[in-house]
Image (cartoon, rainbow, N blue to C red; front, side, top):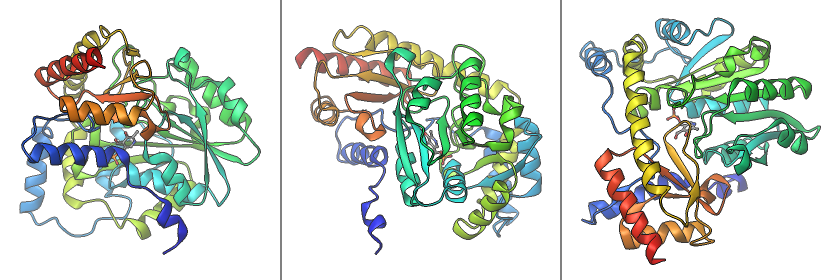
Length: 377
Ligand code: PLP
C-alpha cells in the first residue's frame, strides 16, 4: 500500500453521523445535527421518472460524462452557455476530476478555511498541497483579496472556493466575488468553484461565479442535485468547464468513475425541469429552521456566532465553554444526546457546526438541550 493511502483519514463528518446513528439504533434518544443532507423526499416528479426508468430497464451504462439530454437539461436550467457540461456521480467525483486534471505534484491550492472536510484530503490524494487561507470572523468568514494575497506563492495553481459555504453558512456578494475573480486573473490561477448550496441563500439573491464572463476560461464550476433536489444518495452532479480542462476531466471520469447512474439521470432530467416553486419552498423551509435555531442559540451567552446567510449550517464559537471542540461535541452527545460536528473537521478548532437538517420540533428540542448543557458546563 502506498504511504499516501495510509495517511488519508475517513471523513470526520461521516464517522460522527455514523456514531449518532449507531447510538440511535441502540435505543438512545439522539438528535442528529451532523448530517449535511436535506431530510426531505426527492420531488414526486423525480421519483416517478426513477421508477419509470427502472421499469423500462434503463440500467445499462450511459456516456461517461452523462447522456446528451441531461447535459442539455443542465445547460438550460443553469444557463451555462459557454464551456462543456460534465455529469458524474455527485459533486465529489467532479471535484476530484478537477483537482486531478489541473494540478500536479507539489502544486498549491489556496483553500479558504474553515472548509468542507473532504477538500484537503482530495488535494493531497493527487500529490498537490492545500494551503489554508484562514477566513476571519469579522469578515463573516468570507475570504478577502487581502487574505489571499497574503497566502499566494508562485507555486499556487488554483483557488478552491465554496460559496455558499459549508460549514459557516457564509455567502459572497457580487463585489466579494469580483475581487476573487480579479485575484485569480492577476495570479493566473484556476478557480474551482463549488456551488452545491446555491439554492440555499436566505438574504439576497444568489450570485454565481458563472455570472462573471471574464473568468469562464479559468473557471471549473461544480454543482449537484444532492442538496437542491434532496437526491444525495442518488449521486448526480454537474459541472461546467472550459476546454482543455473539460476534455481532461472527461477522460478522468471515464477511467475513475465510469458513468453516472442511469436511473438517477432520468430523475435529474425530471427535477431540473421543475419550476422554481420547488426551490422557493425549500429555501423558505430552511430559512424558517435557521431563524428558529438561531433565535434559540443566540440566547446562550457562552456561545458566539452569526445568523448564517446560506447553506444549512450554524457555526458557533464554543471556546468560552471548552477549548477542545471535539471534547465539547463528545460531551454534548454523551450527556444530552445531541450530535453536532467539531470545527476541527473543517480545519477550524474551537468552533462547532449545527446542521439544521431536522424538523422544527427536533431543532427546538436540540436547542433546549444545548442550552441546558451550556448552563451546566
Ligand atoms: N461540496 C460541499 C461543500 C459539500 O458540503 C458536499 C456535501 O456535503 C459536497 C460537495 C458533496 O456533494 P455530492 O453529494 O454532490 O457529492
